[in-house]
Image (cartoon, rainbow, N blue to C red; front, side, top):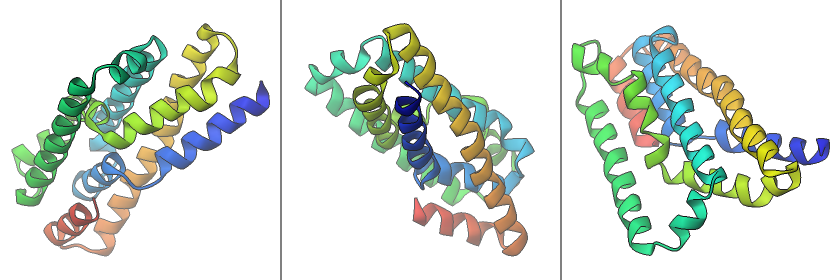
Length: 183
C-alpha cells in the first residue's frame, strides 16, 4: 500500500504543481495582493477540490459518465467561468474594491468544480490510483487529504511566485495581463 500511496502522491504533485487555471489565478492574486491576502482564495480552491474528490469517491463520476448532456453543460459552464475570470482580471486596474473581492474563499471554491483540468485529474486519481489504496473508506480518506495537502503547498508557492514577480516587475497591470494570456 505504501508504493500505491507514493504513486498517488507523485501523480498529485505533478498535476497540482503544473500550470493551469487555478495556479495562474492564484499567481495573479499573489502579484496583486501578496500571499496573506490570498489565503481565503487558496482555502477556497482546496475546498472546491475536496468537494470534487468526495463527490467522485461516493460515485459522482459514475453518474456523470452516463449523462452526456449534463457533461456538455458542465463543459460550457467551465469555459464560461474561466473566461469571466480572465475578463474580470484583465479589466481590473488592481487595488480597487472589486479587485480585492476576486480573491476570497467564495471565488476560490468554485474554480475547481468548473475547471476541466481538475475534473480530469480527480477522475484519473480515482480510477488509476485509488483502487490500490485499500477499501473505500481508506480511499475516501487518502485521495482528498493528499490533494488538499499538495494544493496547500503548491497553490501557496504559485501565489508566492506571483508576489515575487510583482516585486521584479512593478507594472501591476502589465504583469497581470501577461499572466492572464498564459492562462
